[in-house]
Length: 261
Length: 157
Figure 1 (cartoon, chains in turn green, orange):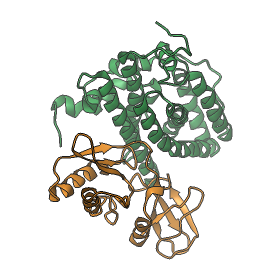
Figure 2: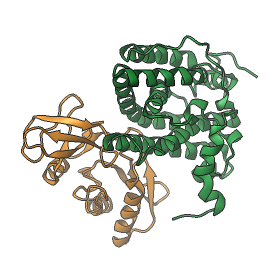
Figure 3: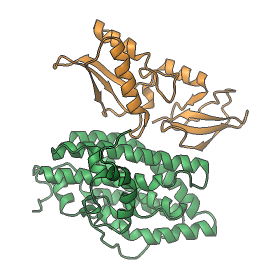
Figure 4: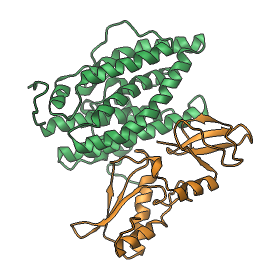
């Protein structure tokens, strides 16, 4: 059921719900990952930075999850969506769930995703879903300084010592295969673009490649030549890491359902 | 407060001027620029629109509760709080009085992303940014190279 790009096909609620969940889950999972750094980062300033970025991402996820819950119309609120779904019902891109590794690997993952979110949310400010456009405008401001942080560190590590360069390059080589699904549309992306809720992913792809290409050049890092590998995190097919992350994140709500403080 | 505010709305704005930001207790929510509207809507209930400074700011929920409590003391209990996301909050909405209070409290204010703030302690313009992130989402961390004191700066977004 793929709609031709350009025709104004109304979105089904199921599609719309799932697309907003994709956005929410990517921010939520990445925020949860980054929060694992709190108390462990190499310097106090970076500890605060990673914690603050995690907080922004979780805040964005809350707005998106609440919106998704309203679209679904079954009375599920942000907490139920965050804490009571299992891994196959999460639709984040698989790059977001990859383990932190060392500080360099975290920075590489962050730069790849910050550049993508920056370009995606920039386009989403023109979404025909007004609430999504409002959330995108808010999120975009935050994406800009997240990118300044991760791009700044990418350059310092890549163009730094032999050790920092080697570690950043190694992380880039390992993570690059997960970037395919960020920029290649699947059937849902095509349907969302055809009704104007999402931008055509080809536009995001072009801008992302330019931004990342320039940053890697400045960082003296080589863009891996290996083929992209198509992961399907956004369809609910994840690497083994997501289940462990959710186990920790959901533990309290699963053990004591409905607990509040 | 809009100059043509009706008496009830005027009372609400005045009450809100006493509601302080829990993280920066020298600033009221009005001076912070997060109160976007006060009006009696078609449903007959009083609506107060507030906008978050940052999506993940943990103070947002405390602020909502403080606003409800302040208005309850005014005898207004059926208040609806609307979360307004558009237009997104900008540090330009910080009032002039708010800027002065922040500076007196020891928190500098970035006037533009391209211009460094002056040290709130000695006034020197010789400062360096230590981190774009600080003790709360809205602040960056600087150090004065004249008096050598570190200080918080309200970020320009």
